[in-house]
Amino acid sequence: MNKNRRLLFKSSKADYGRNKQYTTNIVAGLLEKAYFHVGRMIGASLLQGGSPPTFLANSMVDYMLYGIEGVQLRINNIPDIALQKVLKELEDASSVSEFQELLTAAAVIDLFQVEYSSCGSNNRQKEEARIIMFYDYLQDIEDGKVFLSTEPTKVQMALEKVLQFTTGCRSIPPLGFDSSPTINFCHDPAVTLPTSNTCSMSITLPTAIINVDTFSSRMTYGIGNSLGCLGHV
Picture (tube, rainbow, N blue to C red):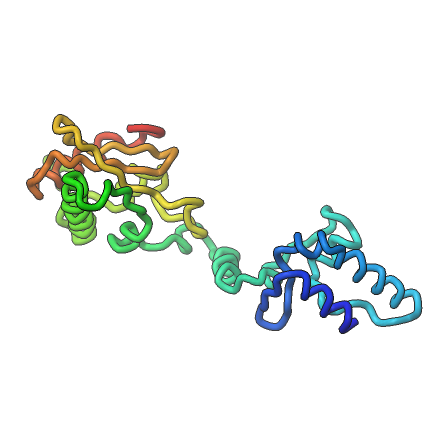
């Protein structure tokens, strides 16, 4: 069996869990017929009263014996320890709200990938200035300094609204987004409101506004009056 194990892991990438070893990226092993030869050796060993293999993941054994319908996926069989941790937290959570991450300006900023113009261009300078204003705007929201309305009562702007405006989601999914939301820029001097596309998860910032307070008020007005619309706003 040790020979089988060496042959199997030589042809595959070995990932180490807490107490076991699993194979991933098994295409090379398939092409080299490593699994075929290992299977023949295991079969010959079993026919002669030898011990069964002890180095395969439980889910792989289930698949070999019972087919895909008989596979019982187990979180402990996942070699990615970080993913294991997230899935266990999800499994143990009594409600969705218990697992949802508290949004912060830093968490929202970390989500985005910025699509800049070429370095050294006039547009690039404007974009870098607007990014600073946008990040300051998000921090002001977290600090409770931005309001959707003040009459008849004050209604605070929320980071969840910015996230919903961009992605359609009011919270960051437990396993993250499939791709990074993006920040783009509009250099049309007539455009003073942000736009977004929730399908591509992108927000477009206007570069025509150079005043910080005006930028904040136009961002709030644009986001606050478009929530509930899906697609391109």
